[in-house]
Every structure is written in structure tokens, then in C-alpha cells.
Image (cartoon, rainbow, N blue to C red):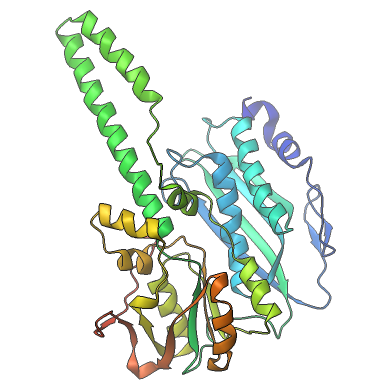
Length: 370
């Protein structure tokens, strides 16, 4: 269905008609000039992300369903990174004429899937038209007790540095998708050149044969067998609210924390800069999945470089007191890995290689303004 046939308010009504509010702090949601929320005893956390087609995502290989899920997760992850609990979300879209109502329905199905998983209420948003591709703006609201909030600036000398899950897989998934996209379009360009040449030569039989090949090429699907984990990490990442709950259960209070969206190197430098400290991170301790290592070797890339600079892992990077060392050891089976420690600021931010050499950590992660 054409979006223009519904109009702005008709589209909003259509995609939000089955939204129900679950949180007590959500007093009133979609349907008025403002949502109404009530937080009598906790601090309010607010995070906003802007996603632009061609900069943050490519609809050649991510579906609208996956995009909706991923867009929600990125914002939910930010609230978890402050040691908070996400509660509400507003979603604004600018869409071009090539999109149908069914596309927006798929986007919202993905969005709702992530929100349902973490009990987040969709309480509002806006829609408009776009002449430059799809634009998405999401604001997520969360809550936390003042004493529980974890900032980036709380790391102290001798604190342990920990990460969750494994790193670099999302970046390897992106490289895999980009490679297959490049191969596909090279084949399309080559075929189109042959068709143009055949037409110039008046060879109608060859033109027909090449056009049939083009129809087959249009339905071509790359073989990603054995790489499913890399694609999942890139196309459908997960927020680590499970880790936040685990730390609370074991009475571990991080001193500083971030989610790894722009790359481990960039996030480490953010924490060290804001906490006025340095760090030592050990290459041998950085967690890397087997598929990530295999893909890096196939692409002739350094897997540690991918893990340090790739981004979009949405794992948690946090520091905590050295006194929590034994507790953290017990949680290693849950995917929490100690990768280094905090030092004095004068000692810099350094990566220690497997053979004991030290290298400066530089912020080479994702930069949307680059």
C-alpha cells in the first residue's frame, strides 16, 4: 500500500494501534501531543540515536525487520551501559516514496520485537517524507537509582578492565556482506555491458540469452553456510541486559562502563580520558569467536585489529574494583572476560602483545562523520 494513501496520522495510527503500555512509569503513550511519564524515586536516563541510510545502514543487505530490531537495540544498549533499566522509546521516521506501508510494518515488527524482549514501551514519535533515503531517530528513556548509575569517568588506578561476549564478529559480518555485495554488482555491471554490446551488434538471440542470465542473477543468494554467527552479530545484535542483571545479582558495581558500539579502542580511550587514567590491555585476553578468526584470515586481516576497531558489537566494556576479581572469575562462564587493568594517566593507553611488546591504543573505531 502507498504510504501517501494513509497520510501521516493514518500511518501512525496503523503502526501503533496494537501498542500496549507495560511500565508503571508510562502514564500515557501514543495519541496526544506528548507522552506522560512518572519517575518519583529514580533518576531518568535519556539517550538518542540518529541513523541515516547510506551512512549507518545499507538496505541492500539488511531487511526492514532486522533494521527495526537493530535500531531499538542500539538505544536500549545505551541505557544498560549506564547500569539503568530501559522503560520507554519514541521513534521518528523520514521515508522516501519507494517505501510501502508494508515496509514500515516490517520495521515496526522488528522494533517491537526488541522492545518486547526488554519490556520497553513505545510511547510516541513522528513521521515525515524524505528525498535522501530513510532516516531514523530514536530516543530511549530509562531509569536508575542515583547510587547505581555508572558513568564513563569513574575508573580508578588498579581497577580491572572487563568485556562481555566476544569482539570483532559484527565487523567481520559487515566485511562479508560488503564483499558479496561488491561481487554481485560487478557481475551485474559486466552483464549489462555485454547486453549493450549485443544490442549494438544487433544480436537479438544473445541479448535474450543475456537477459535470461540477468533474471537468474537477480534471484542469486550468496552461500553464507558456516558464517551465520557473523551475520547475526551484524544484522541482529543483542543488548546485554542479562549481564547487567548478573552483576547486580553478584553485588558487583562497575566503576565505569560503556557499550562497544564504535570499537573497543575508541571506548577504552573514552573511559581513560574521562577518568583521567591510563590502561594496559592484553592482546591474549581479548575474546574472539572462531568464525571471526577464520573470516579475518580469509580476508587477510589482523583479527585483533578487527576486534579493537570494528565496532557494532554492543557488548559491555566496564571497569570494577580489583576486590571483585574472584567474583568475576566465577562469572567467566557467562561470557565476562578480564582483559587488563587501569593505570596512572601518565602511563598512557597501551595494548600488550602476546610477546610482551606495548603499543599505543589509538581511536580507530567507527566515526560517522568521517
